[in-house]
Image 1: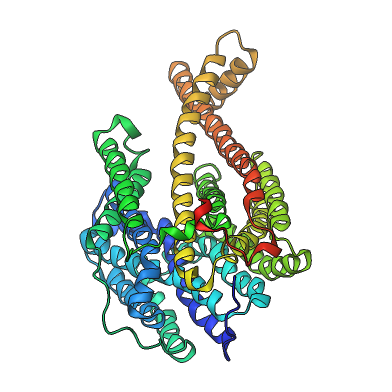
Image 2: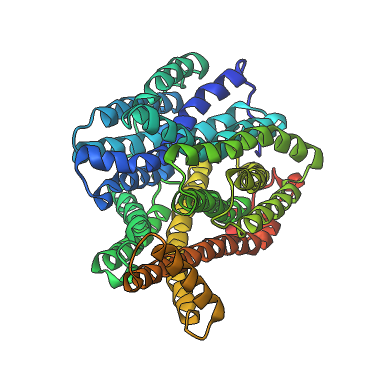
Length: 521
């Protein structure tokens, strides 16, 4: 940062306290995914309806992230973080007690609104608590949570859903939340006295932000299911998001008391780092989106088995973070470490392109562990390079925007990869079907083998041929899906490589204390 933060007496106590809150928020982003089927049966909802349990949380979360700095300034950092933690814990109780889909979605919205403050404020508090010389270790500690959380969620959720009940994926937050509340009260310094008079709140700007970001997140979450712009609803969401966001930006830049300090984007490292953050979010959440689907649909894994499959990668992330912090400190230039992490992540994605129906859990573990190392060695130096040049008074706003970009990157990544998976599966299935003709000796040989296998069960010749044809069609669809999963990993790797030049826009370490003047932008 431009100026060193004062060293707190119990700075690691502070770090653990805010980390508990951030961990709860991040785990709940993904823990619900493995319980949707059980929720559907329990609440009598369709799969489309129950998917709003995930969507509603994401929408509420991204709305609050950019507002977190303003809320912290207005009510006090400790008060706001404590309020968010208590609110998240109570919302978790409401989620677990819900007896209808509507009440569960409302409780998830409350979780998202309070959880957004936990993530952004935790990172800002760490930047303000630790001196510059210890930022790498502090942000490494925080980064381990951010990287490992999305993998821990399905692992923990899969175990709970399989062995206990889906409601306990929410109730388990309660003891952790209570511990976090007491630690926050004890560890965080008391907020300084607030000014007696606050400037008027720009409710119009807040409404525009909520409408714009909410519409955009819904557009990403629901677009593929409704065939994107073929749907009037999705088109209306896109138009609404564009108008509201542009209007919000213009109004905020003209305001003397903005609810979101967009002017912090005048720091080149922040806006460049935020763009790279979108790419990291797409790679982080994109791979964690594709692999569980592949494991369950292609390999027949249960929710618990899928969760356990992701556990080694989560543990690798926790191990890699302090290592990345030491490497970053030794190298001295986070841009070099970031470039190295990009290469490692790309290698992991290349390894994942070779997945097939015969892939074992042990064979999947290696690329997932490599992916964790690559993501960590990207995420940590990116945080330092993007946020370190920002003066301490602006780090709260910068952290909120940086985390917003990463979250939106994950949503964009999942939306694009879902669409790509569907489109490429249809494409490859058509190509493979065209190849299955009577003149293809391999196709005919497979058809004869299937027919013989069916006939051996006592089925007559005509019925056996019909069954064999259906089985051959199933094999075609399976092979098309396998190739399409490979396409998603190729696409993600290409995106990561394309983001490499942006690293050059990040500030050198010796320029960290010299932010770019606003007149230059």
